[in-house]
Every structure is written in structure tokens, then in C-alpha cells.
Image 1 (spheres, rainbow, N blue to C red):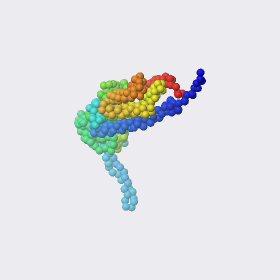
Image 2: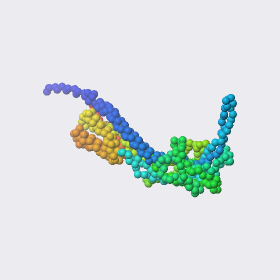
Image 3: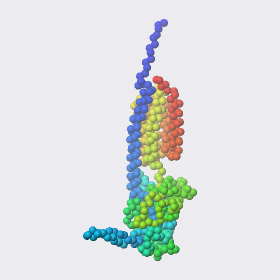
Image 4: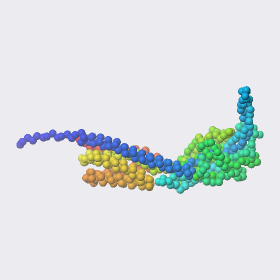
Length: 450
């Protein structure tokens, strides 16, 4: 028998090893971050466009409602000193009589506001959620104490008193403006104001002494607004009671003062909130001279949130893009390594681009439908495309079926995370932990030395 010489087996080159293939797939994942970032930029651009259109519509309909008042304004005479210099440069001090204003905040201020969601205003592709608010005010002013302001009561011009109301949204007021003082009607008129945050309404002048009864003046008035985004108040009453009812089911109670927890109610039909604020809860007095103080830091109220909009959901979905691409490539790499089927880097690239296309489909369909419907359509389209492509690559129906099930589970998992808010981190962490365990289990069958 002739001796047969065994030829040594040729060792595969480095570029044919699993390590080299894994490096190339990893580099491709990093390369696909470029189109993924471009998609995120598109989502951001469309979101900014919506904000601009929303701002434009809100400007026409009515923006945030901020309310400050009512305030009792009573003028008084005062004397101002000034220097006069003659031709010989001798300086003498002279005085002149001027009229100044004293401002008094109410003793009791009650408000009940009913906020109703209006029919969304559509501008192009975008719908803007707006509301109407009916606000009822009542309360009383105590007899003004000029001594606290160091003003001589004899210099007070009692018959030139007026009521002032400041609000941020004059042009969106949709009701006749009248105030009842001790049951006598007075009309409001617009007045110039240097404060860019507020416009001013002032009642007709009246004689305070002739109107007052029992050292107080009661007031009552109603205002109807078109608005958007929020309704806020400044608690100028010595005791301020605010009640708000609305059919809006996603409010955010905001500002310096917290609502009373025992009276707060939020459910699917709307919300109810109440505030009671005393003068000892804030650091400004009930009377002022010269001009009313800037009290914007004491604003409080409710912000009427729009639930997570379509662009926020798209943005959250795109943040998981790298995870989807990486896990999909990992599934193909494990199949390739276990079955010894060769998958070219070009084929990986086509699969990666299909996964990126999911997000462009998602954003474009969402603008004409809901996010949930768009997500289902885009996911089905991408999964079917990748499964059919996998059949031609892997020449087998078993592995493409596994890929289809894996992608379906992955997209479902991400959709659930996007919908969750309080438990998103917990569910995401558990899901990733389970995925890592599955990868560790299947990767143990790979011969990393080949």
C-alpha cells in the first residue's frame, strides 16, 4: 500500500474570518448613522414648521391668557420740588402741584373659569388645539387706607376713581366689557400700557365716596376669551379664590402656587382645580403708588398640554434607530455564522437602508394619519421587504421566518416603549436585558476561531 501524504489544510485568510465580518458589519452600522441623522433632521424641521404654523394660528385666535386685577385706582395731589437756576447761577427750590395715582388691591377676589376645547383650527397639514374661556369675577374693595402710603386724605381726588384690569390677550376678548360696582354698571375702555406682557382696561371714572356702602365696594364682571396654551392669574386679592373647570384631560398645573390637593380632579373627561391664596403667601402689599408693580413672578394657573404630538413620537422612535439596525444586523450575522451562509456586505447595506426608510415612511404617513396607523403601515412594509429579500439571500424559508418574527417583536417592543411615559425606562431596560440574554445564548454556538 502506498503511503498517502496528507496535505496541510489551508488556514482561511483574516478577511474571511468571523472577526473580520463582524468588524465590517459594525463599521456599516456606524456609517448608517449618517442617513439616520438626516432623517432626525427632517423630523426636527417638520416639527419646527408645525410650531411656526401653530404660533401663527394662535396669534390670530388668541395666545396665553394672563390676568392681573381688578385694581382700584384713585388719583391724589402731590407736590414735587425742582431746582431753578437764574442768570446769575443762583439756584432756588420751587414746587409744583402734580396728580399721582394710588392703587389698591381687593380684599376678596373670587374667580370661576370654565375652559372648553374648541374645534381644532387647521392650517395646511397641521391642526392647532385652542379653547374658549368664560371667566367670572367677584369680590370687594375695603375703604382705601391712604395713611399707609403717607398721603394726606384731603389731597385725594375721590370723584376720579376707576377700576383697572390688566390682561395679556385684549384682542381675543369676545364679550362686552362691563363691571358692576355695588350693582351699578360701568364700561371698560382700553388704555395705553408700557408693560409688554399686559394690555390695560379701565372703567369709567366714578365718585368713590358716593358709591361706597359700609366702607366697601363690591364688584362683579365676566370676560370671555379665545385662547391657547395656558390660563394664568396673579393673586392680587388679600384672599384670592380661583376655581377652574375644563373638558381638557391633559392639564399641567403651573406657577408659584400649588392647587389644593383635596379638591383637584383629573380624569378622561376633564379636570377641576382650586387655589386659595392669602396675602401672607406672597410678598407684596395691598396698596401702591406711582405705578403698579411687576408681579409676573407670582403668575400661576394651568397649562393645557397637547398629548405627545406626532413629531415628538417620531423623534422618540428615531432615537431607537441605531438599536434596530444593530440588532437586525446581529440576527443576520448569527444566522450567517451558524449556517455558514455567506452574506455580502452590499446585502447588509441594502437591509440597513430599508431599516432607515422605515422612519421616512413613518413621518410622511403620520402627517396624513395618526402615529399608530403610520407605525403599523411602515413596520409591515419594511418587515415584508426584508423578509422577501432574506429569502433570496438565505435560500431557505426557515431563517427568513425567524427574521420576520424577530423584527415584528422588535418593532412592537419599541412601539410599546414610545407609548409609555412613567414606565418607559423600566420596560426598556427589561427588554434590552432579555435581548442580551438571547444573543448570549445563540452566540455560544459560533466558532470564533474560524
